Length: 99
Image (cartoon, rainbow, N blue to C red; front, side, top):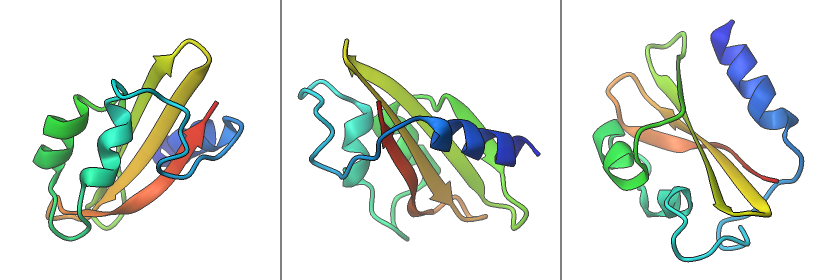
């Protein structure tokens, strides 16, 4: 249920962005998620790169979905959901939302 609530909250935010089109400045830490490599990067790598996640939910398969939220500029807020497998390896971006 927490996973569903987390996903609904993130997806309820308006506007999607593509990497490189975030409108954020160079100090945007969350924007660095593009440096993670699927199947290679780990949860530890993501936390070292992006900081402590704002939310963590466990999936049924033992993996996790981690959420990072940042307001890199007064007029922008970015939310990124990253999917990790049960072994803690990064799988994919679940969602990237820009407001």
